[in-house]
Image 1 (cartoon, rainbow, N blue to C red):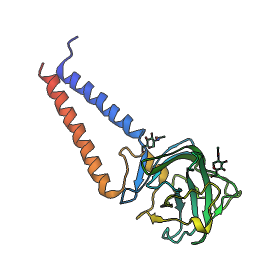
Image 2: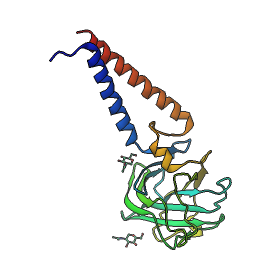
Image 3: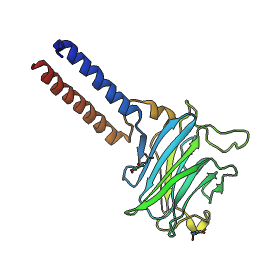
Image 4: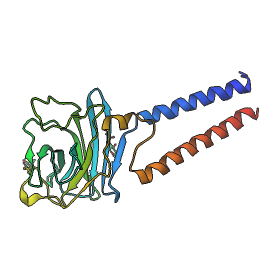
Length: 225
Ligand SMILES: *[C@@H]1O[C@H](CO)[C@@H](O)[C@H](O)[C@H]1NC(C)=O
Ligand SMILES: *[C@@H]1O[C@H](CO)[C@@H](O)[C@H](O)[C@H]1NC(C)=O
């Protein structure tokens, strides 16, 4: 079949643009601590947030969310804490903190474990949570609405599991707070993969360059007939 050049090029352009958009929209949004020791990826579908969390530890690994003023000092954290025990059982618990003491377990747990694994010194926990819970039922739950912005906080403990629950002896070894608030749902809807600012920029540029490069080669190829 012989198509006029312009039509072929336009057709290819449309096809390619569609492929790029489709790949991006199924991407997980992602947050990384600057040192690469903690990473949270997430996606959103029908009022559910699906998380993929990694900590550089063989002990417990946790993420927390808060809408408090500066995100610090464990004020009103809604926490998911999980990992893998030495006998390979997997666990996750919801905790709620009000200050820098051992947090209490969520009386109405919302985080659901789908998988946990330990490999090469990293612990990975995959879990999900309904984005908006019944606020009257539990006023300490963070509500992930389409307009909610939250600080992302993280913590882990070296070596020790917390499969029987947190105690003061199992306090975190490392912790941190994001440098800005994130709208978790909106992050998953943007067309470019999100990341921490310093490597986010280079990723987007590289992706655009690859796209433009591929397009150029294809158009050159088509118009050379
Ligand atoms: C979670 O991330 C790891 C890479 O760190 C990947 O292998 C795994 O497939 C991810 N899980 C999901 C559900 O995307
Ligand atoms: C694994 O260890 C946990 C405590 O760390 C215990 O509750 C559980 O019963 C153990 N499972 C097996 C299969 O031994």
